[in-house]
Length: 341
Image (cartoon, rainbow, N blue to C red; front, side):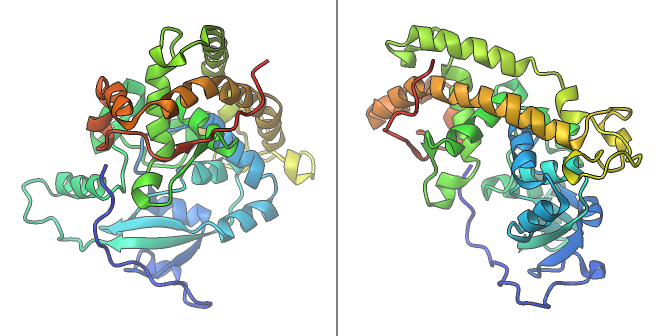
């Protein structure tokens, strides 16, 4: 995935400049819409999410309607416009968490590029040409995390931000928690930031087995990591997707039943917003905190390699074919976190 080429950027939005709903996706003009309207226009550009990471976002930013409103006010959603649709290029986990919360707050859609409807009319396959451009610019992640990051057809992308339609990539969750805990740090360039956690998820997936050569002198930690990861993978979907219609029970926002559209999440569930947050805070976050601490020897072993050795290690995989580079982006924190128990 190469960095985006030169593109005209949207100007900053001044007060009162947001477009009305009838002008959604107008070129280079930010648009403020309620999420119930915005999600009808927005399309994902990646197939997988870390469901645990999405729940972490839910707990951190969407426990109440006021918190949700504040979060989305400071997180404009970047998108590429093409044929009247908004192809979202970042904040997939945030939008999935917002949708799961049920809060219908304002969302700012901020265009980063607008293609004319006939931009690819000269191509034999206009849709294929559009997605080739999206991938080349780093605006889409067209790799299947459930199939060792094999190339995927854009038709396999979800058509909604309902969490259940994304593949659950546990390794993507772990990479997110590793950055949150300070083990991994992104670089400052766009190339270093684009899909940063997917880069590291790829690496962890392939090198974290108990026989992994990069674990060096920590086989017991590798075995502990494997057992913890098995636990994370066994979490049933119902822990993430339980949703039911509001029926007037309770008045506390943090425990209120999730909003409507029960059928989008399997229907008939009885898991409340408060229970999803409690699961994240009491089960998921502690589990992934342990995983991050167990992951340290592997990340530090990679960081200790020379660049040539790093390239050689990743060169035995499909890493460069998937990501278009030969070493992992960002840095590994040198100072050890709390040692694994």
